[in-house]
Image 1 (tube, one colour):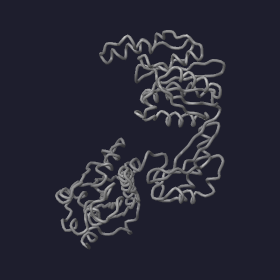
Image 2 (image 1 turned 90 degrees about the horizontal axis):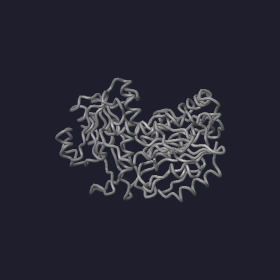
Image 3 (image 1 turned 135 degrees about the vertical axis):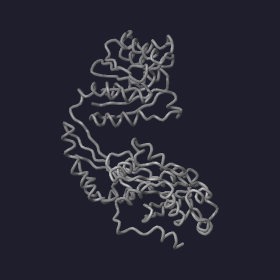
Image 4 (image 1 turned 135 degrees about the horizontal axis):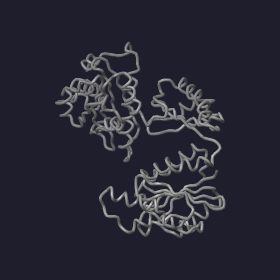
Length: 428
């Protein structure tokens, strides 16, 4: 079925709010086998919203809206949708009771204006809101359907999963399943070259995508059941993993940090961090993952040279001779983090995030990363190539991702290939 999305809210047009609902709904509808042909953002204006809806119904079977279901006068999505279908609004008693209960639970007096949210188009299928006061609904007329959902993602996502998904499943005769094979350390073009003939497949399809510092291959299959689609995808994913080898860090994971936490748990290892230019970003990303406390207990932000010396034990002569952004200092920071934290492993990052340099001839985007277990080590020199005014966030993000990937490679590499970190530091 043909579907389009309409996102209501002047704040979206002004850029005050990021429209994450668009990405979420597009992905979920694609997985159901619906063709999302158009997306539109319209402000809180009833005339313009009505025009958008009428135009959309000419070309699509289903319109899904988010936003404009609040209790204030400018929240008119429901009213306009009902008008387009010539449906009167009537009080939905179950929703009204739920709204009253919502305010009771919070021990707050309910404003009279919130009763407006319980008015629903006659004959519509009402969707319960378990995270807020605005119910959603689906209305139908002449084979066309409009589904209205609240704007806040926390409310919208749960309503979609619990209510809209079962409602829509009866209109789809096939499913579309996708899995993403995520890589690090190989560019999009080289990744695509290694995938080669796989990119020409029709079902499943294989498509390359690039992200900041990493790349992925998305494998997508269409079938009558999810099980059939998974059978089509599985051998292709395995073939990709074989071709790309250690560049693959995971399938369907949110990022390198999710992979690292899982890998540390699997190996029974703990990790500490010593960060300079990334300012705690590595530790933040690790602790974004639930259960990270079992593998991560210490993060040191050694932004100044004084902290590098006093906390991590970096020798002053190394800082004076080679500078804070150097192999010697990166290795010393990692070793110091292992010693003072008691962790099994430590990763350090020191570099120039930009947009200004550090007063030397070293380029913006130069970063050194070291990983050690206290005896052996792995070191990486990174040149991001980004020195423009807006480079700082990119350089820090890529540095953090690279550091996480270096931890992964250190864990997986053969111990026979490792070098002695103390000998390395003493060689300077």
